[in-house]
Length: 259
Image (cartoon, rainbow, N blue to C red; front, side, top):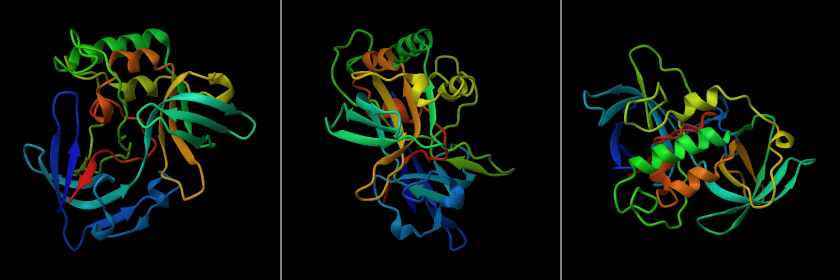
């Protein structure tokens, strides 16, 4: 049994994942978010803090799932500012807003890059700010403060008939009064190249990356620029802001595991 915690702006949702001897457990490769690159694994290799996704049958209230298949792995997320860009090698250096550490990230041919238009970013910022509980930094009427708006992403794997993927909700349309459907927004935006983004020192970005191997840079799965209004509007929401509202795609699972 694995407990998956899915934060939101208002409260965390906990999902209990039950496994059987027939459950297929996989672990994502350190340098890939593609399910086809994942290796056979076991529950013993799932650790607290891992991001996890399970396919199976949920109970009526969605709090438990009997898994037929489980994918787990580590996918760092960064809300950061750009330090430097080497377009020739596809490398960028960013400073994580939470840890203040400088992180090296490589842009590959599979990396999805998007620049969020100013109007869209401002709309998202307004919605997020209105959703945050009173007293939380960045909430309407609340004080401003620092924080790391980052979190897990959800895979865009089709759900077979009669089964459900659990570990974060896929965007299925804008819900009245709910979080903005970022995945739907992003799906309508053209992908960009590093040159198209024209990133400058100090620009704010949100990055979902692979775990990587010791001594090697992370590889970007998704990189979003133009996010300054969003980070300014909800600076203290942390991973709770990003996990459920954001679906950055690319195959990484949603939900943090604990045992």
